[in-house]
Image (tube, rainbow, N blue to C red):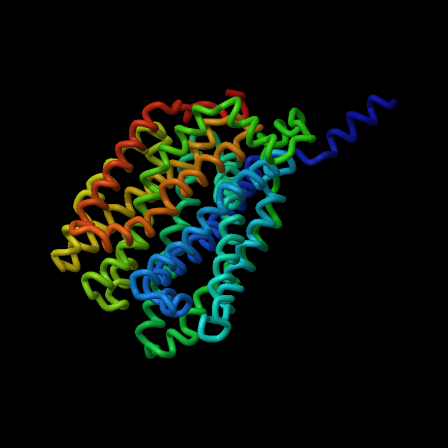
Length: 449
């Protein structure tokens, strides 16, 4: 009788269906895309303003060149915090679940951005203003260290076999779409407000608008579930691991993989900040483009690059992650070698084209990267290892770029050549690292490597 009762109870339990799996996958993609959009919207706005307005608002006591360097240094504070966030949230995500951690990182990220939009300037509170700016940038970067990798892993683990690349590509379009939206907002504000009004309050609007993405992201994220791959892995996880122990375990067991992940992402992360952040400063300060023209160029280039993320992810499902990644890096190398000479020609259409080529390479790589990184590590260390790869690439090759670029242009006679050489060098490093990584695109994620 008890056997009959047990069988009846088991039969009464809901059985997962294909439609339920599809719904879970769609929710994971929507959740991750909104988180990615919020991340890159804030970063694009901050990166643009750090090159144009923030030197005056937060560092007026410095001369013009030093103020730009100081502004870019605060920009790097967010990148500096990302590895710490990656270690803490990566370990927690591998231990207590991706969804639980991602709820917290989304809230922390959104609130930090809103508070930046409410900051007093140097004129109001003196040195307290840049100190608060650096602190909020640090908190924002700390949250992003866990958000970026966690969203990718959640999406890839929910994706069907054979479509992980495409799902990662859909997630990646949050970046160019958000950057386009940021440029549209900044362009509109610059066009319809006077310079004084924009400096007084207009720059705050994009940061405050980020709260809308936060609300929508939280609503969607509450409805997603943990992946089956994580549930299986959790039974074998060491519950006593601290974040430090988890990170050290990953580095001890898979040091080569983590290093190659860091190096493979060197070019996309470094050249992104050259193309989007320092290029804005170069066009406005060196070539004397109006802010509205510079923002318009970024809008066009970002719109062109949107399909590249999905294309890259989908292509990687057919020919493999490594081949697709190398194609994307080759596009980046061509753009890196030609960008500044083309910009210097003052040909607007050609400048749009070369920035679009760079962003298409970056987005094609980003569309592949989510699945590529996830497949390179076992489930029990996937969140931590992926976060270490992404965040340390950002810290080493991304954060210093705007600062180094500004210093190069201020202290050398041929800064554009030096910066182009750095970009091409990063591409070569990333291609070599990609070749050395394993190709696992046909392997189920739940299998231990």
